[in-house]
Length: 230
Image (cartoon, rainbow, N blue to C red; front, side, top):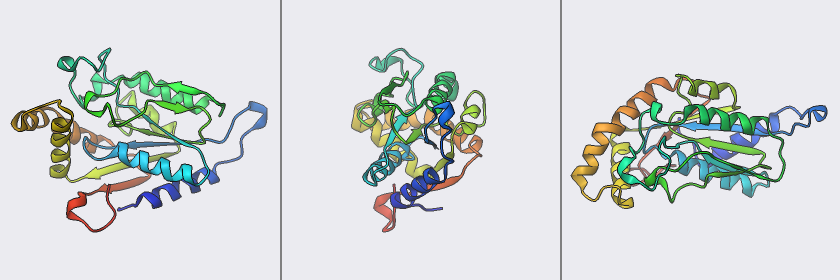
């Protein structure tokens, strides 16, 4: 179903307000965890960022953390990185650990460092720190709703599971444009080949295995629509 940024922010705030009051004896604080998954080019990071901005404007603190970490030690060596690689090349267990860490942590004023390096084409898109005192934390990443282990463990740790759907052709063009805009590829044909030999299979796998969803968001091409889009 289509959702505007405002609708999503409103849902996040409502879900946060509906959380039970914390157990003071266990020093727990109220915190809503949201996982946003979806295929390459679906706009997960942009959606998470826009929703967080609206939530923060309402007076409730909200932070975003990207879970799309490379298995390589550094994202600076572009020769060894497969952008948006298959799930087994990601630090799935580390992703589970980060979500669990934030789930158990009290809302104290500190920062949690993500163990992940950004994908080279996303280097300007995300901040990897999440404020420790945030009342709402949004995780965004390709495999967050995947039903395969270890990713499947995340579903039970979060309060809300949002999946972003996108027309395959639109997603393909977005990713190809990203390759070119960031210099990951300098040739259009090479960018197309990279997508067709890698990302398309990841997209199909993510769409097939991401079944547990509380919200389905339709990501559409702004150029072809007059309605809400991502």
